[in-house]
Length: 219
Length: 139
Image 1 (cartoon, rainbow over the protein chains, first blue to last red):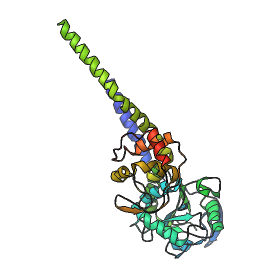
Image 2 (tube, rainbow over the protein chains, first blue to last red; image 1 turned 30 degrees about the vertical axis):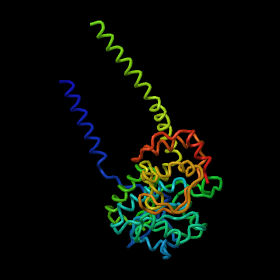
Image 3 (cartoon, one colour; image 1 turned 180 degrees about the vertical axis):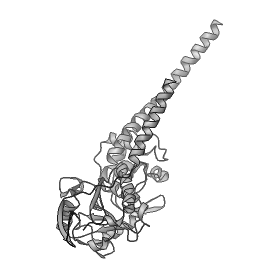
Image 4 (tube, helix red, strand yellow; image 1 turned 90 degrees about the vertical axis):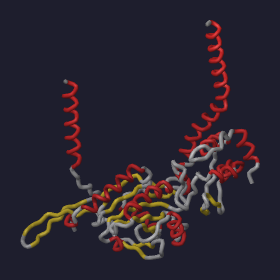
């Protein structure tokens, strides 16, 4: 009888826990932020400005020019790779394919994979890579641009550690992060692109972002 | 009665003896296979995947049993020196570069035994002596 009571108690507690965690928490907003005070219609309002991804201009695998504007109103995932990378890139591509397949028909989710070896990864090389990976259409862009620009935006903005290290296999070392950006271009998550579990979490988080009301937009 | 018991005991000993005899090859296989699984994880899995499925049309799967069987003697060289140029796997064309892997003949034998007996393949044990002989014939 006591065992039964204990069992019921555990069951109730467990459910209580489950109920608590079932409450959807908003995804965090990363990066620096600063409060601004403005006066609108005689009222003083304090607002927060979050760090956002700045302007950029790259070229995709079709040779089209892609800028920050091309991603307006889109949730997107950014990562950094190169086509001849023998170490973690195949794993990242395999995991990113899951993200691609989950959202290729959704219309409001994109993936941008920046090459960190633009010298080798020309537009035709990227197109061939995308074709072989089984990626078509405009959901997943493979972007090429000036190396300085890509390293700059990677380090300063996507918070991804990308740096040249000739001693590593393939000549480059990079962290393999997938970075989640919301429709307001704010950083909402970073995930280990080599870990299938974290990539599952990324897919779940994108679905949550899709549900987020647009009025949270803070300019 | 006593005779019967002795007979049973003798039969049991015989069975045990045969079983242990037979498992000599089995033990060798298991030793190669289990270490080969670890070599695979470290050196092959990133590209060829845990389930040997490769990656789309970029990296071939390791599931084409007839390809592996027909090229059994060349597999050690593929690992040691890498592979480039067009190949057909599961009737699909692949034409990218596989990098060379600096593994010892023993490690190559272990990983070949693992791959050769996983993912639907059945090549039995590929031992160190075999790999050393095969490596001598690399082009």
